[in-house]
Image (cartoon, rainbow, N blue to C red):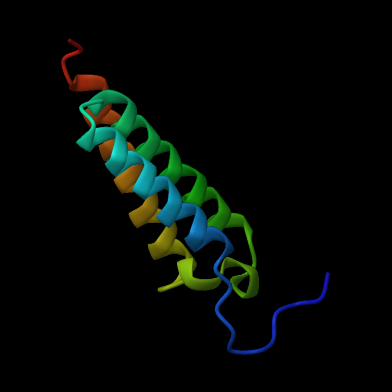
Length: 91
């Protein structure tokens, strides 16, 4: 596989994040709060792992700041969403 041209912004991990977030929002709007929060947390966690291990040229649009800051922010948001999912009452 050839590396991306210099200056291009690949959408792979970002597209995963956008799609997972959209699915989570659809679940929450349809009344499924716990599964929606779990999907959001899982999506953020997978994106954090991708950002941690992919080179910047393949991380694409997810690489907004330094690798450490991106991974910490994505991981923190994932933990927050998963803790929220764990503490929500189930009907």
